[in-house]
Image (cartoon, rainbow, N blue to C red; front, side, top):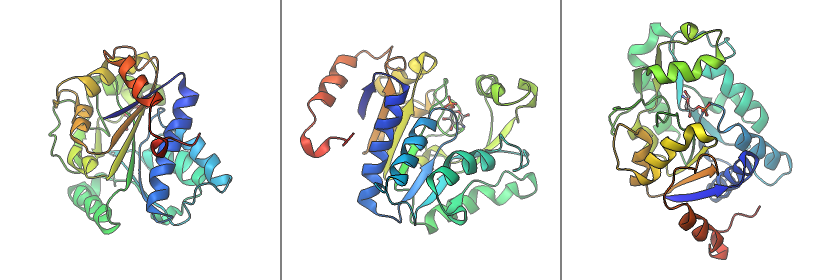
Length: 263
Ligand code: GLP
């Protein structure tokens, strides 16, 4: 997998956005984006919004598919992923809300929600560029450790670590929903290209496991080693436990011109 180590979080946003923009431009204005929630991709979304505003990226006909949603959290709740995606992605990137999709977390419709979401992604032609974050326990989307590496969109139960980590978005850990609906690992792997962004030393163990460990459902993100077009854009802190850090920097410093990111 391609590994790009940046000096700080702001640079992760710039490089992450440049990578996504480069991949999206190859597809054209009708690109289908996969979008993650969480704090990690926020700088990338801000930079993408700046590229759109500057006329350097055309997302006028783009679609987007979110990875996941809490079960039973009203969509009006500011921490629902419907609200989060609208606030951090749809509005700043100027996407047409009708073409932005988030899994249906309504308990009344859960039995069909996974299949319906998979059908929506398929009808759009699949995801061209998936923007990913990673949990401290290595989860991608809400695919917690031991999730099937072949899984499709379905209901999951949050791991204790995820409840603790996400408590900062709620009044307390007790207020964090216990269930979610998430794209499966197999669904995520169907994206034609994947750009994972991560910052901070709380992600260093997961990043080392994902990039340099064995492929294992104990670290769900490690499956990206099997993807033919995956890039990790991380800061020095998140890269802190990588053994081959010097090698990744050497590779990036010596990229051929045609692979360079124009930033
Ligand atoms: C959340 C989301 C993931 C996200 C991860 C990391 O629970 N379901 O999609 O990548 O946890 O979040 P953060 O970027 O805030 O650390």
